[in-house]
Image (cartoon, rainbow, N blue to C red; front, top):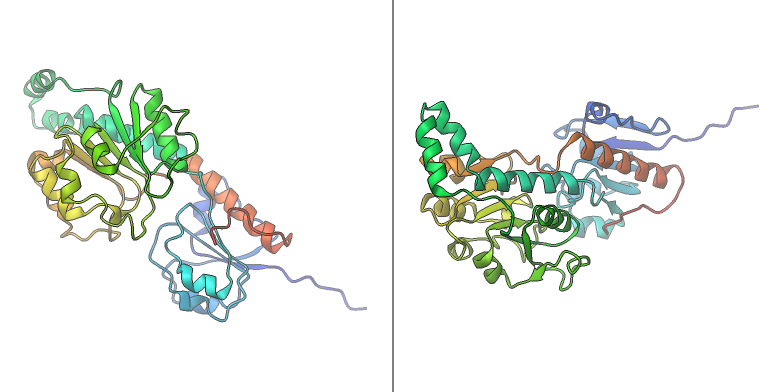
Amino acid sequence: MALSTVAVPEVLCLRPEADFLRVGVTPPRELDIAFVAPDDSSIPSRLREVGAVVIPAVGPRLPGTWFEGSSIRLAQVTGAGVDRLDEAALKGLGIPVANVPGGSNSALAEYALACALVLLRRIRWADRQIYRGEYSAARARMLASNVTGLEGLIVGVVGLGNVGMAVAGAFKRMGSRIVYCDPGVADPVGAAELGAKPLPLFELLSDADVVTLHVPLVAATRNMIGAAELAVMKRSAVLINAARGGVVDENALADGLTRGEIGGAAVDVYAEEPPRETHPLLSLQGEAAERLLLTPHIAGVTRQASAYLFSSAWDNVVRVLVRGEPPMHRVY
């Protein structure tokens, strides 16, 4: 009598297994998983052989043609953003796409809070001055400039979704007053509980001491912060972009920092990643450069956040391929 065999679902994962193990997440043993580098030339052919694909939220766009002729039952992103995938193509092919919403909320709130404090308190500038032997002069200048903390400041949150709410809550707990503008939602859930006041974008920009961006990159938000928007901000205000690079006109931001139109900026995301050596923000000199914080798209990355994102993503793959249930957090 022949032994019956049960087909093991196959999954293609576009990030190394070490990423998961590093944060204490073991990929499910009941899945047959192939881990490949994100630039592996075999990805298009492998996609036609698997039941699911797991991809990082950050990286180059995956052409919709790669998914043609596949039997994929789930494209699972290990984060919130799904803009790497061709929505029209995957919808046309009937391939469900799921994400893990909210997993980086705390990490992003910590990042925005930390950047605001570093910029407002001029910590980076002071650090550089001390390295140059200017301790006494730096201290005198900081005392004379009356550096400010967060209590009582107006924080403008652009995009009051899950992340924006977490960021707004963090600033609120520090004593800041919250105003917001959300181009996608007229009455965000939870705004009233925070005492958050809705404002049109230009009014928010002119009133706020801190402006922090948390919107997706869509047609309506591309370059939503440009020269005209920067020009109405307070000269002491700081801008934080941990959303998507295309939301801010990077040339306009470089010009605004050079001319002293705003007090500082923190940038975690770029229109092109990694940014080229000729990127306008990398060309800043002097105090303009010292009023700028640059990080490599890691605002939402902590050990705790990664562990939650990874385990939730794998749970969803098991849910679909092993248990035959519909995916959680289906985006489309």
